[in-house]
Amino acid sequence: MDNIGNKNIIEWPRARLDFSVRPGSPRAAGCLVMGILNVTPDSFSDTGQYFDADRAIEHGLKMAADGAAIIDVGAESTRPGSQAVPAKEQIRRAIPAIEALVGKTDVPVSIDTYNHEVAKAAIEAGAAMINDITALGDERMGTLAAKYGVPVVLMHMKGTPATMQIEPKYDDVVGEVLAFLLNRAKKAEKSGIPKERIFIDPGFGFGKTVEHNLLLLKNIGRFVDSGYRVLVGTSRKAFIGKLTGKENPAERVFGTAATVALCAAAGVSIVRVHDVAEMSDVVKVVNAVGQR
Ligand code: HH2
Image 1 (cartoon, rainbow, N blue to C red):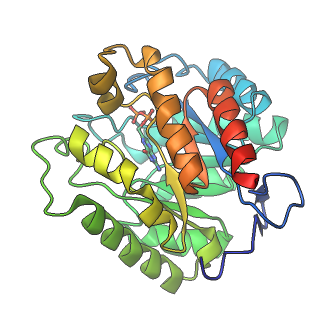
Image 2: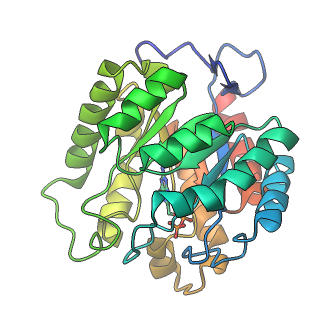
């Protein structure tokens, strides 16, 4: 990796992330866990469990206690076939949970949105990172991240959540997704976001068949080799259900663990998961092996 190779710690005005396997270790960079907090009535896995602000806050704090290095708050489901939620409603859902979590835990909070108004409100409420599934599809998002000095996650998606799973096609899924992400990452740098604050994410399940997801997972090392830090979100997704025969997302924990272990072993920096306690154990073991 160039530029970020020896930096196992990234710090910015609002927070810091330490990727060292052993704090202070100059050698190995390990994988961190991002916990998913969906303040939504209709997410594919949580299906409204944390729509109530108090329950969302309680769950966020539990994920922090279970080992999450970041809590990712989302106020709009982007499951296949879902419709967009207006910014005002996303703000109404997300801000109370963000404000409470920022006050009650040191674990940084990220906002999962592609809407710059929602991201701005979240940052003003104390969020420290932006997770954008459209990879700065709206350029105002890049300007915002640069202005506040917060890291961004740039994710690949083919189409929109409403249409993305209708026969997605690629000639070379790995090459095309990687080229798209590198292009967006360069744009992000041009808008003033330093390279070490950019994470790229292939977007598992976002306009991808089972075959596409498997090829991306098998070749995740190519994304790591790009020189940008990589974030991966496979947690409980449909392709894991198809491979294991588990229709209920809550039963996809072991399948998810396999993907998390593969990613951590390949040098992925962050895994975005529902099952924080379980996946923290997975990354602890893989990180310890990686340090040898
Ligand atoms: N996946 C989901 C949402 N946000 N962000 C990134 N960076 N990467 C992902 O893979 C990703 C994401 C979808 O999962 P979830 O939040 O559990 O479901 P829903 O969109 O139904 O709320």
